[in-house]
Every structure is written in structure tokens, then in C-alpha cells.
Length: 223
Picture 1 (cartoon, rainbow, N blue to C red):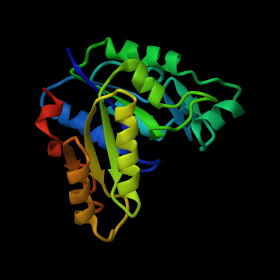
Picture 2 (picture 1 turned 90 degrees about the vertical axis):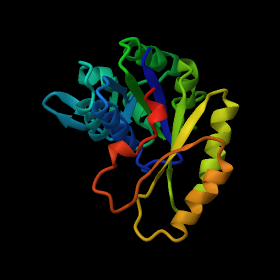
Picture 3 (picture 1 turned 180 degrees about the vertical axis):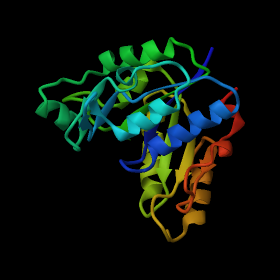
Picture 4 (picture 1 turned 30 degrees about the horizontal axis):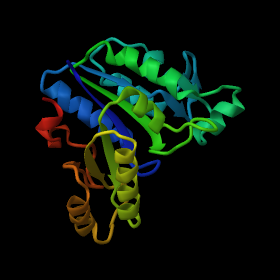
């Protein structure tokens, strides 16, 4: 039975895709098979093959399981705005149950590691009543929280972790990422969150890193 994780973040632009790609690459480096789903992606570009999202393409590249782009990213939305707004502009209705069914089909391929990447943070809306959290709840998979280490991250991380656990899901761990240079109290904030979050720090990545070090992840994620 393969491992699977839902990747969420404390906000948009915190490096969820970079972490997901590094996690998949770490699995590949260990000789494991991989698969990924980004069920909804806004900010797609029109190509000769249809709408394509940069993050979904990066995930697709590190899938050793044979998947079409549409299997990785079933809802590709052109406007670079909140997904439910983008869907409304295109006359689409996003439904958590439908998206969970799509994700489950990829989970059923039973790759050694499958990651499902959300959009933005835990409570980003899908429609009038549902959020991306409802996809993870429907799948009942453990969650990895990506935290952008910057001013305000302590509150964002603690609230996100509280919400994930309140929704009845396992918070498998968190990843400290740095998307801004010269963050004051960087080490202190990571240490503070380590003391406050009731889950392990799975990896810590610096702003200067050209790419996230795949081997930095905790071995427990793969076994």
C-alpha cells in the first residue's frame, strides 16, 4: 500500500509545489514510484495542447506512474485569481466530492508515494459552501503543511494546524520554506514553531537554495 499526502500551505506562494516536487524526487531517489494530482489550478496558459499550469507541469514531470496531464490537473483555469472566482468566470462549478473522486482514481493506482496539492491555504474556497479542505477530508489522507518563514507565519501556521486537526485529519508534519531574503528571526521562528506544533519538522529550506534538497526529508514519510 503506497503512502499519500495532501500538501497545503499557510498562504498562496509559500512553495507548496516546490516542496511537493522535492518530496516526489526524494521518493524517486529511493527507488519508489510516484504520482501526483493538482485537482484545480488557476493561472493557466493556453498552449497548442490546451490550458497548462506551470506547477502542474512540474508535478507531472516527477510522476513515474504514467499519467496524462488531465489526470494530474483535471480543472485548469485561465484567470490567475482565486480558483472559485476563476471557475465562475468560466461557467464551471467546483465540487469537493467530484474532485475527491478524481484524486482517488490516482490513489488507486497505488504508487509508492502520491501527493495531492491544494491551492493557497487550507480554507481556500471551492464554491459557496466548500473549501479545498473538503477534498482532503473526503480522501482521509494525512496532511503536510508548508510554512513560509516570514513575519506573520507563526499565527498562520498555528491557525492552519488547528484547523487541519479540527477537521479530523492527521497533520503528518510541516516544512519550513523561505521565499524572501533576509528574514529577521528566521531561525527563532522555526524553533518557536517546533515547540508549538504537535507534529515533526520534515524539512527546512533556505531562500538561497537553487532547488529544494530532496534528501532533506524525514525518512518516515516513505515507510
